[in-house]
Length: 191
Image (tube, rainbow, N blue to C red; front, side, top):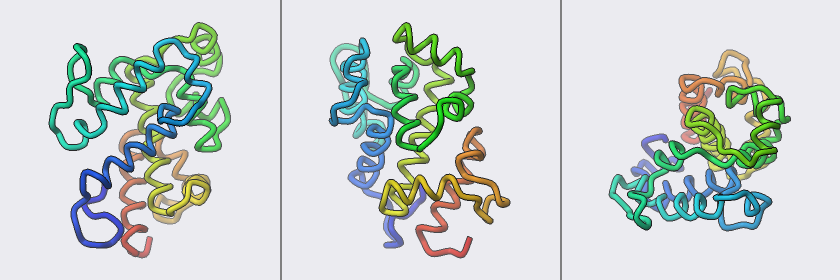
């Protein structure tokens, strides 16, 4: 996250960060909107934990949810995202099934197998998927439009050595490069 929001020179407020987190949850298919994720066993509980833990994870203050502990995105990722979240992110980011599988580090056949069993993603796969969702949400925020943000992710960018941001975010370091570039664009710095 950039240290300032919308070129105002101010630090991001909890509401700014919460808005980005809600957009990320939406991309993961875990927001308040109805989706086919609703039918995945455990998805409702997972969604509740994520939604109610957003403010706590962004402010650093513990927000209890039930007797499971504290509601942070980090804990939710450790518990494993529902496999259907991969399809939701793929739809939001206009990625093919093989592209989303590659970004989360698994084969398409493994993704199919997990989907058939309604399994959860592993911690590593969940972390990679949340990274993709975070970048898609950030791009949509910077361009003030989901379609424009996603379109930007699929175009070669001089600031990334003429690579497509969607290809660069396969690693955490690449994702940071994309976030830095989005911050520069947001603040009007020539990229």
